[in-house]
Image 1 (tube, rainbow, N blue to C red):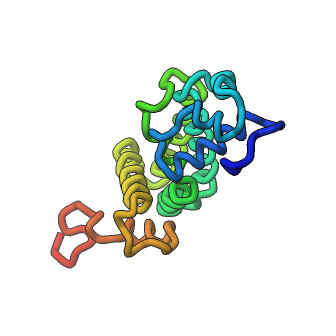
Image 2: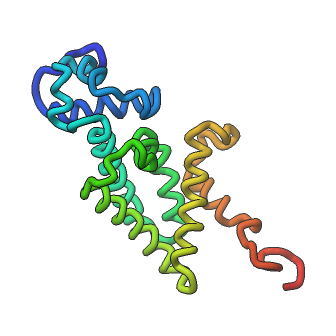
Length: 193
């Protein structure tokens, strides 16, 4: 929705979420204001509060949607590296969602839908790790998630300009194959183990 056209009919809730995603993508989640979104949509300043209650309610709706989309994407993974690659690709394809999903201070932490969506996403990550790592699956999940989330964040924030434009799944695959990630003595090196 363009900020130049007032909202007239249809799904106001969806229109406000779309406006919020535009603001987040261009200015970050801290720039989201229900009053400003109402102005952009051409509705009364009270209309967004009717749908979301407050700013945290709106951002929680965006986070829930993001977690659900991410869980769906992770369901398509064929193996652990594909899972990580899909995580990074999701972040780059949905940067506004990603910016909100992992900012608990912006969200309604008591929201049941948020808790369920987070749990479903974590379950997909854990399942992907458990298929490969039976010894310490919780630690494996943390390691895989940290690698994927860190790479996604570095790419989103422009800290890896030499990698811009490359397929994020291929970048994750290359990084996850690097010998430095094999931290056990002698593993992945020519040194005797």
